[in-house]
Structure formats: C-alpha cells, structure tokens
Length: 395
Ligand code: AMP
Ligand code: ZN
Ligand code: ZN
Image 1 (cartoon, rainbow, N blue to C red):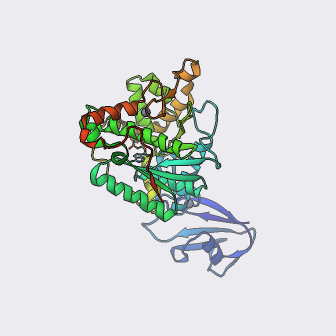
Image 2: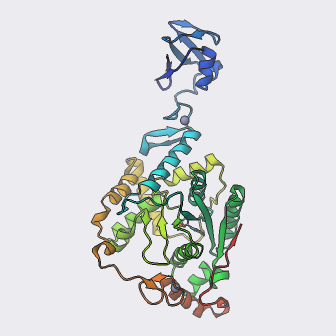
C-alpha cells in the first residue's frame, strides 16, 4: 500500500500495489508537468519504482490555479458546489449525486403513509415534460436508471414559447429513442390557455394548471400507465409549502406530498421524484449532460406569487444554507400532523364525471365545468366534441 499525500486541499490517498511514480500520477489523473513528487525527502522521477511501505508527497508547482474546490469523491477539480450538502463535485460525481437523490426519492419518499416506493421497474411511467430543465432531466435520469418511462407534452397554445418547447421535447425523445405523447389543448379540447383565460375570468395560470393536471391523468389512464411523474423540484415544493403555510391552506398541506396514491378508478398515482434537488442542481445537470432545454420562462407567469416565495426562500438559503431543504423535509417528516381527510375516514366519495368519466367528488369534474364555461363563451372554437378521446401523436 503506497500512501500518497496530496495538497490543495491537503488529503491522503492509499494506493494498492507496486507501481512507478508515472503510473501513480496516471491513476490519480495528475499531469506530471504540474507537480513535484517527493519520496523519503528526495525528489523522484516518473520511472522511480515505489515499494509497498513508501510514502510520497505530490506537491503542486503551478501557482494561482490551485486551491479551487475539488470533488468530494475523487478530488478532481469541481464544477459545481452545493453549500447545503457542504460539497462540490466533478461532472461525473455530480451526475451520481443527482441519481442518488432521485433514487432516494423514488425508493423512500417522505410522507408516504404506506412507505411505498413511488414506482418500480415493472411500472410504466408517464413523465410530463414541458421542455424545461426539470422535466427533461427527470426523463433523462429515469431512462438512464432503466425505468419504463414515456413522455407527455401538452401544447398549451402559448405562441412561440409553446412551439419551441414542443420541438425541444420531440428532439429529446428522438435522440433517446423514447416515446413522446403530444396533446394539443386547442385541437383536442377546443381552447388554449390564452383563449380559455380570455373567455373566463380565471387567470392564465389557473386555466393552465387545471388543464394540465387533467390531461396528465387522462392520458395516463387511457394508455394504461401506472404513474405520472412531474418535474417539481425542491424550490417548487418549498415555495408551494410557504404559500400554503402563509394562508394556512390545511387541505392543500394535507395533499402536498412527493407521492399521491390514486384514489378510486381512473386515477393514476402522481409522483415528484425531483423533490430533493434544487432548481440550480437541475440546471447544472442539464448543462453537464448536454440536454438542450427551454431557458426562457413562460411569458404568462409574471405576477405569479410562486416566484415571490422562491425569492424569499433564496434569501433565507443564502444566509443559512440548507434552510429550504429543512423547511420542506421537516414538513414532510411530520406530515401526519396535517390531518388528511382520507385517513380520518371522512374522505369525500370520489365518483366518475358524468361527462368524461374521470374522477370527481361532484357530478361534473372541475375540468369539464371549466371547459363548458370556456366553450360557451367561445362559440367559434367549440368544434371539439364534449367527451373527446385523445388523438395523441407519438413516436
Ligand atoms: P409548472 O407547473 O410549469 O411549474 O410545471 C411543473 C411540471 O409540470 C413540470 O416539471 C412538468 O413535469 C409538467 N409540465 C409543465 N408544463 C407542461 C407541458 N406543457 N406539458 C407536459 N408537462 C408539463
Ligand atoms: Zn469526482
Ligand atoms: Zn369531466
């Protein structure tokens, strides 16, 4: 065993076997031109044979470049630091870190009363992809980990932003040989986020959110998927939590969990495998993996309180790294305090919507009610049928 002392930062490595100094530097991926190697007080050259009990010091000689953060795993130069983990990583080990966090989220999701995994390798997963960094990174990781994951892109009719997002999702799917479902809201349901919001007094985000949640579930049901996965990350979930706490939305708090089991028929389990990873980590993952994503924000979001809450949490995080994760994970660890109707036995009875057969607690589901209001106000666009099936296009 050769003991090797490295500098900047100071650390010790143990290496197996008899080897030359040149082989040692090779194994540690160190350029011989940037260091001196010292053995028993003397300088040694690359051909010097090291014995089992030898101790060597590798001393950097290039000034100015040293002292940068190094990877916590392999000590090579780091490309990203995360104060929350008091860690920095090289590209390879950062990808491992992202995989590990997602693995942990899938296998041991917090606030899962039955302690069940989000999904298994046997399950068919529908990943809702927006073309943004989070959902494409999620799809990429699930495919890499060997899960059966297809994509779903919903065309929301937000002009060039929607067209660019769709193209990026299609290119990603083609490059990975993965299946992508595409549902265009206007073609299938007769309205877009923009016209739907104009026709009602609802905000664009309100119309959009309800439509997306409905289509995720409906496509999953119609194509027999076991779970829907979305790209909600740590920042999204912490901001939602702050909003729910500020308004003491007990019912929303009860339902804010990384995995929501299906309730009743025609409902598919919903999962958020990125809830342990920050926005910044997801962006870094995409850059490292060369994933092209839509960097621009949805042009309709301004004035969204979610962004305010994210800013506040980022200010806290800056002063106290880890605050955001503590806030969210701490909540999830004591989630049972936020009594859930279905666990108290007085859960509302979930039945089937009389228009579309999707689950609802009333007679007509919120989506169908919203759609009927929109189409009544937009007669020109009401060509679509009342209970359409999905003409999804896919590769
Ligand atoms: P957002 O509601 O825009 O913050 O997005 C949250 C998650 O919803 C994303 O990470 C995606 O998984 C999914 N999503 C958003 N927009 C779309 C879309 N147009 N098509 C499919 N999934 C989407
Ligand atoms: Zn490394
Ligand atoms: Zn309905």
